[in-house]
Length: 288
Ligand code: PDD
Figure 1 (tube, rainbow, N blue to C red):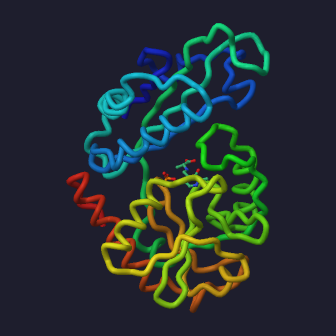
Figure 2 (figure 1 turned 90 degrees about the vertical axis):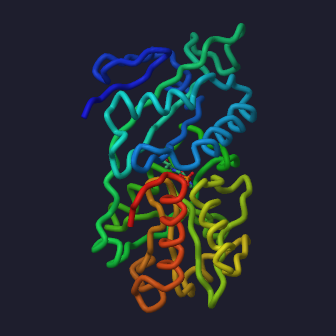
């Protein structure tokens, strides 16, 4: 499998890719990114990922690069990923390269556009059936968690805390509310009801979250987009995280205690099936 990346208008081997030390992504974290999944070489909801990126560029007053859809397809082609069960494309756009000064470069400089693609190994059925664990971590992010910026230090530290606690996911908690994961959204089951934090400036509006909400409603499940406290989360009968690389991931232990009866629950199973059903429908894939 090749390792061809895209940087500033050119495809090249990763080993040849160079950015300037004055890139504003490097100096200030002044940039945005997206991670988009493809199944069997077909993207899931690429339009929604690009719409989120477009909104980000508007909010941060950055230019939105042209030709991103074709760039995504070309990255899959050039890396021989069109037959992979699952692959991901990473795309990063920064405000460009200019001598260090906090305010925007004046006149503006071209954006830096960087992209790569790789195969992604989904968890085995055994691992999924066993379930995963999470730890709660204070949310130390800025007030615009709805923007997918490359400033990820709080998420990096939270994920490291999870790893050191031998957990898969970090549950970010702010003002007593269980908001989302370090790189995924979170859902809770209370009785027959599914709950997740509403889309606000405090969470990233995940595309997988949106799809899971759609399939849950199609399934006739009662859905509440509302704040959930950590205390409530500790009493949920089921917890799962959602995201591009997370899909629908069951959490069977939170902070060392079992979630519900400590096994993967029926609502999580149903939504995992419904989510994969949507994947197969949209991507013409046969993932299970
Ligand atoms: N993470 N919340 C946060 C904080 C995220 O970083 C992500 C995505 C999500 C889920 O969004 P989506 O369903 O659109 O992937 C929620 C990406 C995949 C990452 O950082 O690698």
